[in-house]
Length: 137
Image (cartoon, rainbow, N blue to C red; front, side, top):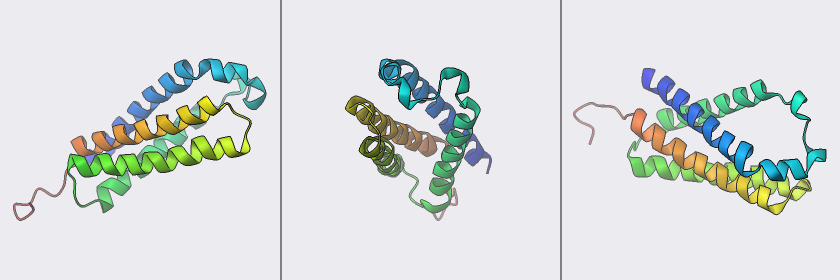
């Protein structure tokens, strides 16, 4: 339980950092070029954004910790990659399908989610361990 909580915190922090890099630095000019699509900075709901990230990190870690039995790094990275692709396709290209965002933004959202998934997978592999009983291989 302690490892799961630590993993949730670590994944949340990692994703907050990658989010700041992606949205605050890489895509900053794209957001500035499409102000009609976004809330003014004074109206941003940053706390809600962090709560959403924390909830997603908790779900990501919980699923891995509870239902993935093979706790090897390779499995965790594949888990993160698959969830990252799923999240990235819906966030990046799903949004691109219905919003007039630049293609580069959709691509960056997709790739950012994939990177987040792989980073999250690596973190859970390092922190969440399988059952340490001697009869487990």
